[in-house]
View 1 (cartoon, helix red, strand yellow):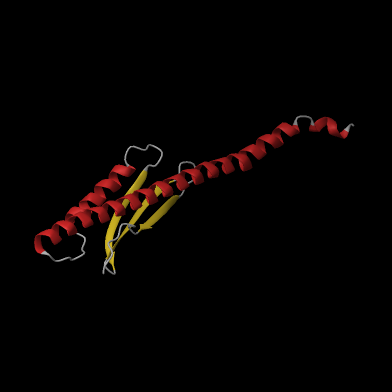
View 2 (cartoon, rainbow, N blue to C red; view 1 turned 90 degrees about the horizontal axis):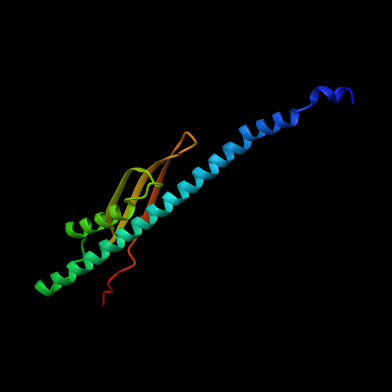
Amino acid sequence: MDGRKWERGSALAWTAAVLAFVVLPLIALLLDGARLFYADTRLEDATSAACEALAQASIYEQVRQFQQTGKLEPKVTYTSRRAAVAVFTQDLQGDPVLQLAHTTLRISTVNGLPQCAATSTVKAMFMPYTSHLHAVAVPSARGSRR
């Protein structure tokens, strides 16, 4: 009993050390991970919505072109790209949790089908790192050829 007399109150010091060096960094990592997952999900949703808007605008333009000329040429025009960018930016605006930086939307055509790719960077709130997010989408609205 005599040896333990000087160790009185050490449990509080050990608890404080474990909290400071183990539990608090894990909580910070958990919060940053959840925020990054949320930002990635929002970026994927915005990319998919932009690609669907691109496809719908392209279909409307192709129908109008077919009615005027009688020819059907599937292509992505400036108007359909502008519609996709408008939907993309509108979908990502107004969310204080996201704080996305350097967000870009790239629209390309692969084998005659439009493809949308978005990239963004997110700075972590608690940990000192930056994460780069990528999302790729292909529109589900497609015309059938006979």
